[in-house]
Image 1: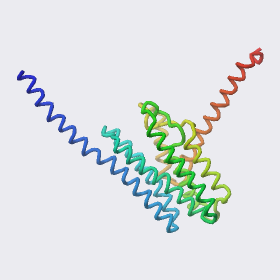
Image 2: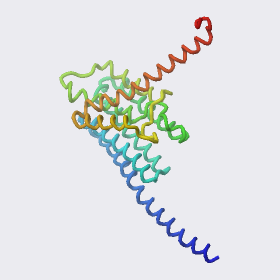
Image 3: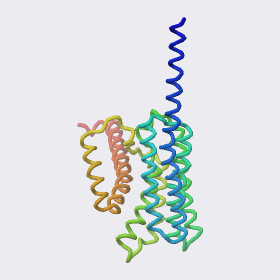
Image 4: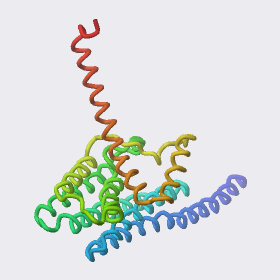
Length: 262
């Protein structure tokens, strides 16, 4: 009886210590999420003042904070429902509203109704993408269904950054912008699968080498590197999805036409 009582008494301080550490460690990922939200808000402010380059870079900075908050939450084992909800709210502002407002004020303000409809579709699809992810069972998070909203925001932000830093003497044709926004919007709510790299249990040597090369490229030339990384990621999922569907159609055709094997 005395042994059981002593074990209970020793377990209680351990539990309280773990609870104390967990409560204080949760500040780190939530702080990164808050900075993500602040960057999104500041991007909207910069866009409203015509500072489009700064607005684009703030969206990319929000992307960095978004990556950090997830990493810190997993490293410190303090993932919580509160953090997940806060993250979704921050993502909707930084990767839904901010890039949409940037594109509207930079490219589509001359035709207000049309521009509002196009950018409104982007915000709506981003919200649907986040809601679908939140109700998806954790076991299915190894692969993203649809383009993640930070990547969708990255496409619009890097497009603006790339244009302003390298082609300031010319603007992207206005007719192309709605097409880019709509394709990005529909990719977010599509069933196209994208690799969830942060969920993979092991990091291979090839992946380490790819990360090192990407970091070096970012140091050498951030705008071009970010442009090709975000656009390449979006096209990667789209290409392999189309390839997968084509192969599936060919297999069905061969099954329905056995004479083709002869």
